[in-house]
Amino acid sequence: MFKIKGNFTIYLVIFVFTFCIFTYEMFLSVAAKELEGKVSKVSGDIIDINLGSNDGLTEGTEGIVRLKITANGQPVTLDIARIKVTKVTENTCKAKITKKTTNVQAGYIVVFSNIEIAVATPKPTNTPVPLPTNTPVPLPTNTPVPLPTDTPMPLDTPIVVPTSTPEPLPTSTPEPLPTSTPEPLPTNTPSIVLPTETPVSVAVMKTIVEVKTDPTRARVYLEGALIGRTPLKLTDLVPGTYLMVVTIDDLMWEEQVTIKAGENLLEPKFKRIPYQGMIYVPGGDFIVGSNEPGSPDGPETKVYLEAYYIDRCEVTMAEYANFVKSTGYKSQGSWDMYFKKGYENYPVVNVSWNDAKSYAEWVGKRLPNELEWEKAARGTDGRIWPWGNQWDKNKCNNTTTNDTSIVSLMLNMGEGKGPVPVGIIEKGMSPYGAMDMAGNVEEWISDWYQPYPYEGPYQSGMVKTIRGGSWYHYEGYTKCSSRNKFSPDKGYNKLGFRCVKDL
Image 1 (cartoon, helix red, strand yellow):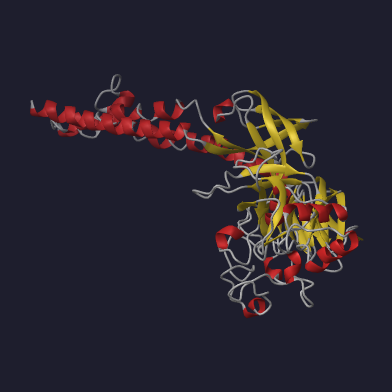
Image 2: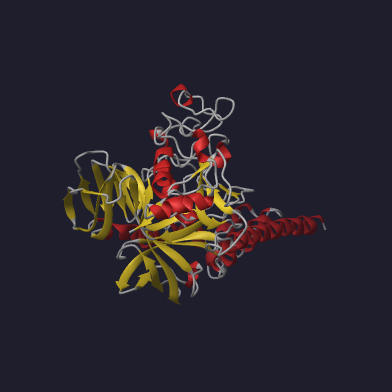
């Protein structure tokens, strides 16, 4: 009875252990995950991908085509296109390109997010089968202590016990085991290693690109994403055609460049941006919103925007004063209470949304919508502040700024705090070169305020959206994703604006 109970307990423990493993692997198998594959073939707007239903893909699954390169030794990931799966087999699928910034080519990476693996039988069925059959066999044979000569034999029992006698077992067992065991290992190993050799054929096609400019330190954008400053060396770039934009100050060069295998040298010839004081924001995808817990500005969403121009700096008092003088415009806000000699280059404040809109129309521009403002502030990588993801109180004019070179220039609007002249805090510049997108003064947006997620501009509302934080605010308000609101017919001393212009 004791032996029966003991064996029963052992079997029970094994069963529970196996069940736990089975349950855990099943949980992992259905958990959402990110899949990464590669484009194997391109036919017009249809691409073949080396992932299929066994990987959890179904018709209608959406993904992103990406290109991973190295720029001056730093890894850079570019989003090339969006796709939707149209046909699925077990190990491959076809997908249609729904939006792209350049031509997709074989070898590009494909990423699918939040994929659930519905078919998880291979792993669970393999795990429990060997455990109950292999584990209990030695336990019961060792417990009753059989003949000493039988002790080594149970190890080989599952293989040859029905047809072999006890005598040949010791002699025959060592011979087949060492010879048979190494044979399958070398033959199986290549089948595992072969897939890892696939990228080699793609790597042969990759190339080196050098971008040189005069003046240097120009920003280089590839497919809308900032990849570095000149002089710039790119590697791991698949040959093909790409949209490249190079800008510095009010100079710009934009061209569809054809990159060939081997070495490529690009020396852009700049043209002056046609609108003084504006910067160019290339078209392409970017991340809007925030996934920070408890944030009202979420969730993060990837959005595509066409190219546009945006003012490098906030509209100044001198610029707005010229508008009022030239047109006789009667402002709703008391902007002129701060306009004194020496303050010409400070941002205009105390202007209503209606005032800002009237100025923008007079200069042939318009107010930015939320998406345009946010992209100009944070670029394509979803950074928290214009300069990156690490807070620095002296990279923007905010209530905690204590850099004396900034504080000494503040226009005193209360307790020694206030705005500073536009564009003086260069270390807080955005990826596209926009200044004061965090702090200094908040900025009017064309959109009516609405709760996120963003689903397009409202046609009417009670309050207008404002962005950017000001000299009065703490770090949370200065984040690129942070949003605020205010009545469109009023102004206050923390609120100004800048303009955009379509191409």
